[in-house]
Length: 296
View 1 (spheres, helix red, strand yellow):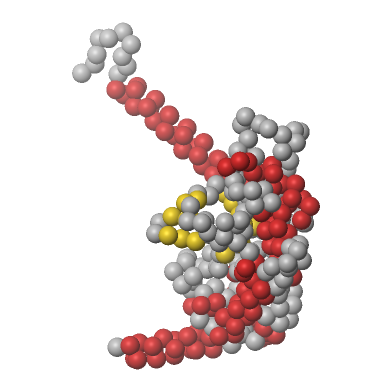
View 2 (view 1 turned 45 degrees about the vertical axis):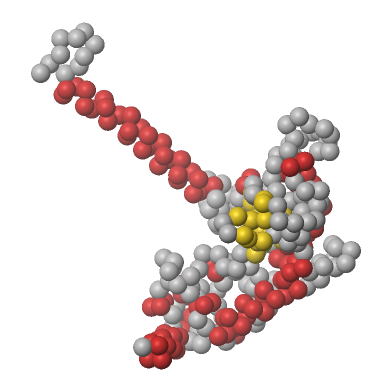
């Protein structure tokens, strides 16, 4: 029934108008989503050819006041004087606690540490003033501990270790802990025949150039696992030249978290054994059948 109210509209006229708002919202979200994807895309897209995430990771200092100046809005005093001064961060139940047992919550951001110790030391008070007490080191020199150019899979990317040393030492002075992320980001790994991973021969790689990245094999292949242990051991035990006692990351309480693997596991959407060479497929199938037989 049509209403006689002067501001009413017939149903056949109202319906299209009711659809305009959700359609406009959908268009806005879709456009924003595409823009965000382009902004953070790697390699950079044509829309942002020079960005490479710099606006997200480098945190340019735009503060003209000294960071140690008293500030009614400054949050630096919420952090410890030096990150880790009360001991190693540990987990108790569903919460994190400091070495002295006091609960701690983290307000974290991403950084790269790509510009060295001095730049990280400049960033640290800028971030601490805004309440940041954790930085995740991700990107910069590389996103992984392996060397993408070396002929040996066990070769370590020294630039990443130096990057971690610089960030941990610089940030701790502002009470900021470090979340170590640049350990293993598989997308950057393209196997070579010289790496010695079963099945990845020169002929097979030449015939399958789009399958050089061995998704899932870090958890299964003995050569991959041995190389990973070498990378991680070097990262955590190499002396830090920025520290007076040359303390390695494994012994530094300013290291709160170490991320072992980034975006690769046997349940991730990239996992597809059909992308492995036939020899590698046979090895893993045989191991699986053996495990099933022994277990059941």
